Image 1 (cartoon, rainbow, N blue to C red):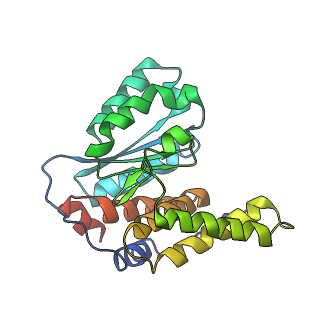
Image 2: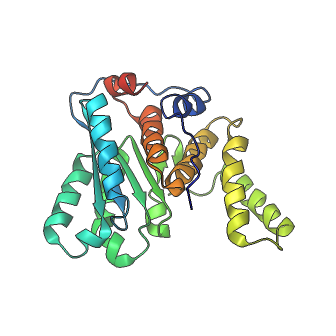
Image 3: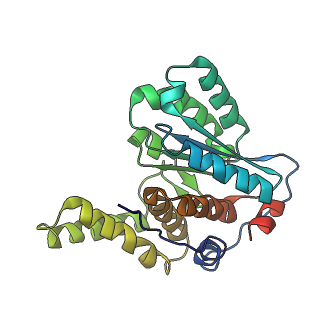
Length: 233
């Protein structure tokens, strides 16, 4: 079965979809290497993300992308040490599918320590302990639910009552696709929440085009390196 691409035009669509509806960051030129670190459960996307990293580093000489799998660091101290060093040097971290304690506990404190010194920390499809570390612009998931989050909970509950006869997964995916369209017109924190849900969509697609677009979207929205922003645009 072929996977459906969310956005096939990776050069244009992510830029227009996100930046035209949010206030620009105060970008600065950084002398340090911009490092994007991906932490996930296993290696099923390692080859794809490595290819994307090579493309991005060619396009943006100041950018590096590293991926680490919990299935590796849980059994190899050297890989765990290398992962911790990359977390320490990262500017943007993307985390996905860290459910098991044996996977997230070895790096949890490292993420907590680095969290406030990152351009963004995006944690999806993970345990509550990990997901709460998400910090993207004005969106801080360690804080009590904001008005926007409360609205989304009510929206989700309404969807459940009207879709009881349909599979839960189908209803959730429909909601996931509709939320970014709704949040697009709500200012402030909602724009960062929109990026969070778009990140889920991109990642779940599993295609190289969409994962490439995911990283471009996050860099354009949250990176503070002016040179990288210019090259991605």
